[in-house]
Length: 55
Image 1 (cartoon, helix red, strand yellow):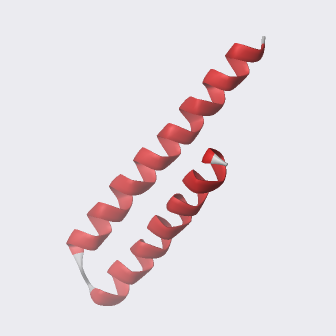
Image 2 (spheres, rainbow, N blue to C red; image 1 turned 30 degrees about the vertical axis):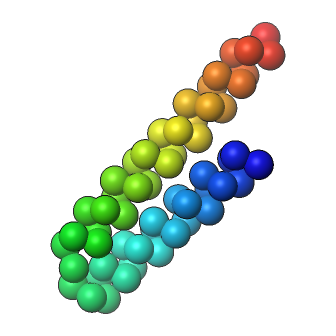
């Protein structure tokens, strides 16, 4: 369930970049990029932790 939540957050942040381009807003773009990096980082980190704990 946590991976689904993180993937939805990542997709929303990617959509935010599209909104930022349409609105010509640098602030929205920066917030979206930070959101993508954080949510993908958490997802990959949790995945690595789960794989290592099962071995």
